[in-house]
Every structure is written in C-alpha cells, then in structure tokens.
Image (cartoon, rainbow, N blue to C red; front, side, top):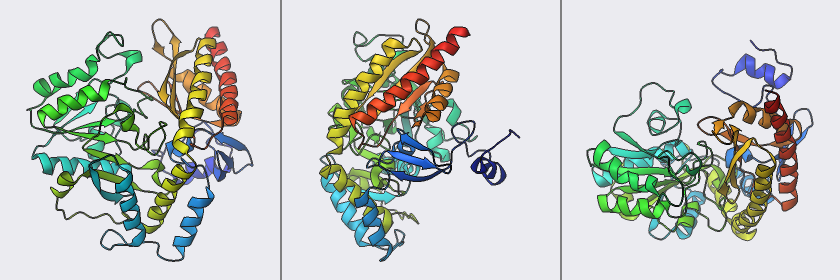
Length: 436
C-alpha cells in the first residue's frame, strides 16, 4: 500500500473501496465552502474551478438555496415518487415553463445515470425500436446500460454491456476522427451519422444520444452547424434526439438556460442533473408530451422528487435568473477564454483551448506537430494547481485535457487568479518536458 500522511487519506485507505478514486497523490478532505472557495481539513483555502464536477452553479452555500433547504427540513424530507409533494410539483411546473418549446412533461429522479436510462426507455416505447446511436468519446453514466453507450475505453469497465449500440464519430475538431479540417470538412462528422444508420444498424433506431459538449471526453465542443445537420438526418429517419445536458444546462454555456439552445435546435428529450439543485442530488428527464405518454409505467424512484432537492432546484433556478448567471458565464467565460488562449501562445505544451461559457478545456500535448497527448503533464499541472490553491479537473480519452468548470458566480478577478496559477503550473510542465 502506498504511504499516506494525511488523516483523510489514511481513513480512505482503511475504509473505502479502492475503486473510489480521488484526485491527487495525497487526496484532500474538504470541510467547508463559500462562494467560489473551499477549505480543507488542514485549513487550506482553494479557488474551486471544478465545482464538484460542474455542480455548484450558484457557488458553495448560496444563501437563497441554503435557506430553502433549511426551511424544507422542518416540513418534509422524503416521500418517494409514490406520493406527491408540493416542492416537487412546484419545481416541475417551473421547469416546464422554462424548457424549450414542446418539452413539457418531466420526471424527477436523483442522478444523471438514471435520467439517461429513463430517456432510453421512453425512446424505446415511443418508437417501438430498440437500437441506439451514441458518439465516440461519450460519457453517459455508471449503470450497465449507460456504460454501454459510453465511448471511452477507461469507463467501459463493467464487463457485460448492452447490445445494439452503434457509435458515430464525434465532433472533435482538434483531432478529427475523419482526418479533415473545419470548416472545409463541411461537418462530415455530422453527415457520417447517415452512414452509421444505414451500415451499422438495422434501421430500427430508437434514439441518438449526445452530450451537448462532451465533458468527461475532454470538453469536446461541436461547431455551430453540427446539431442542425444531425437533427435533419434524425428527423428524416424517425430517430429521437436525446440531448444529455447533465453538465451543459442551467446557464453553464452562457446566454441560454439549456446549452443545446446555443445550436438552434430543440431535442425530443433532454436529460440533466448536476448543477440543477446546486449540490443536492437531483435529475430530470424532459420530453415531448406524446413521447412521455407512450410509456405508462409503472416506474418508480425511491428518492425521486425529493422535497429537499426540489426546493433546492427551484431556488437555484431563481438564483440563475435573478443574478443573471448565464450572462455572467458568457462574459466571464469569454474573459477567461481569452486568458487561456494567451497561455496557449506562451506555453508549447498547450495544444488546444476550447469550450463555451464556463465549460472550458485546455488540451496538453508533448508535441504540437504530432499532437502526442501529454496525460502525465496534465496530471502534473492538476497537482501543481492544487498546491497553489486552485482546483480544476482532468478528462479526455488520453486524460490530457484540463477541465475548467467553475461556479457561474465567479468574477473576472477570480478568473485572472486562476489563469495566473495555471500559468505557473504550465511553466513547470514546460520545463519538465524540455528536460525530458
């Protein structure tokens, strides 16, 4: 067993399963949070630019969300979906009003994984078909079925997986799977879905799953034309478009509450979770009425429609609106993107900077010409940032992309501080790779 020095690391080694992985050689134990900051058990304060994997859109301990939860604790904590409760109904009504036109029926669960499972059930019942199309580098959850539609080898580790899943090339412009260049490619990755339907399926396809921007896959951001082309193909073949907005909704991409709206299309089903209740477990499936009504159940979720989570979600939606968090994500995100692109000019180890709003990725490479992934360098930068008081994430097929997904409340000054720390960490990685 590796030597551990902190009390939290020692307790993890003693009591938690080894499959419960944490960041950093010496994991940190967080004890409190305030706004864009967290504090560990040794009193160290960190600027949190990963937000619990893009969850805390309104920041840690937002007073309005906290007050709603405290009030609800004294009334009703749990019901299950076998009973109605007023917070669940209030939230469902509000969500229906805010959703893209035509998406007006909601199921409230408690994880993105189960939301994607239910979306597949709806698609099967509505279309009477059983096959699905997913994207390379996709991540859709940790159940056996959602692992089966995940396009990353590191996360396809459950053994038995569902059949009848066809994978299409993703819109990874920096490493185009079709070896083309945007925009002269004419968005061939989107048009390739036609070939996938006709050559890799029976033609009886229930739905197409896509994260609006691939998060775990490395903040892979499709070009503006992508989803419009995809939707036309799907509609022509009678295939439902299921947008996985687990990470990209609630203003994170700037401008719109739902990220997919940035591409000017309306999916048939939307799933989401993470940031919706600002830290409390919740998920939603929103579908067109005729799709939702095609599945009469019975369906149940023990913790679905939880009163605490529903109150937190309603309060979070109010905060997003009242504090203009989508607009802040747009403005501060553009400022941070500019800072990151300046770092790319300065540091040879940076191969690509991409994303929208406050969902940004910095891909590291050992060589810009060959684009050889630099996963080890990304881990070194992740650790160096932590040592200097900044928490970020890491992802991508090669674990070589830094994930920057802070709370939507951050200021330009905090973005500048994050860029300063990242600058120093990248400089360290540059020197190490130069010596190698």
